[in-house]
Image (tube, rainbow, N blue to C red; front, side):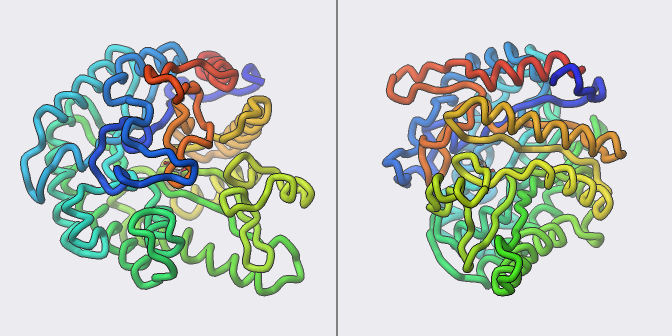
Length: 410
Ligand code: FCB
């Protein structure tokens, strides 16, 4: 399969993580959170201490890019405070290790977590979060700009706002607060625009920055063609989670703030009597299988939708695209390899049709803390033995397969 795939020589083959999910030792709204498997993020993969080793793993894979977060709560102890030098030095060293391994970083400024002083003041419902975030963005960009030019302001604002205020899965666990969902999206989108301007200001005279958000895209469809109520629900979900969010962040009026669109793609949610038929919604695997719905341990897979979506976003939005996340969680490695193959074929075919895709970041480098689900979802190119306090990493067959992709498609 690898030999069939041809990608531009400068294409980024990367992998991705986020601070709360891998670093450990964070002090944010997730610190006291206990996931459904009893797990917490206090140590996670201890990437905080083991990052040099993890860069070595990436180098062994042959990736040439890494999408990583910088954890706001580590870096600023109060609004407009100077950045914490010790924590900054750690990130600088991590970036130097990446550079030594010829790995280009893409840095995410916000990935589902906030400093405690943002949370106690109402989080992103409070407009005060906007200038605070922009100040943080300016300071971190000024500190890292010699080492970083690819900036991802917000990761999946739609997932963040819906799980915090509609579905009750993320702290502060509110449900059905549609007004709050809308407000969070509006405030984050405003912060994106202002942060993008601040990033450009900070980078003046140096390498031009690339700036974008990472938009999660889920297909919402009715499972049964006659069920008009599910069609209606799918249309409403599509509007609220896809259309509205994309419009707020990268619609025509705001497009100039971004130089790229990040796309996180995991698949589809089909609705039956208002219920999403996906494992994350508690629907048992056997039932999904009996209905002919192919899933990993989280979502329905929909590789053909990937190509379709890339063409559509290219047509409608026109920005270059980075696949900022794609991956699957399963203990069945053949399934994961097949899933990746199917999605890469779609990616290549869309690129052949002229869709400008610049890179692909596999989610995830390591098995990690998967938010509400703790350590039960195995997304890693490397597995982590969480039962052993040294947290040893071990390569998986998916990792070996990805290594061949990274090495042979250039
Ligand atoms: C995405 C998140 C990422 C991870 C993957 C599985 O929605 O951005 O942190 O949880 O899903």
